[in-house]
Length: 99
Image 1 (tube, rainbow, N blue to C red):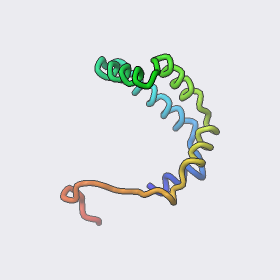
Image 2: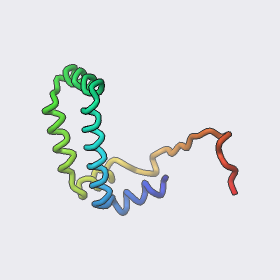
Image 3: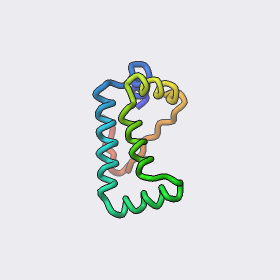
Image 4: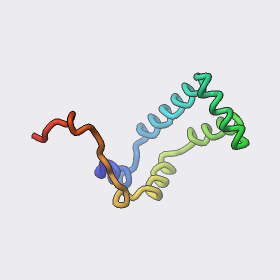
């Protein structure tokens, strides 16, 4: 885990990784809006925060406009792998013994 975080800091993300992330985020948001209960919950939340689905559309436009240099610069500003805690969790009874 630490190696992958460090790799992202030093080498940055690739154009394919950014495109995949954008695609995944948009698919998730579209699927959520296709669910009546999620749509009603989102609408209630937006009303509480004085937002509309127009705000949501503008947010999605901003997500889709992120460039690779912007992403990598933001990641480097926000993430220091040395300051992160990495925790592994699982059911010890299901774990295989180390070879």
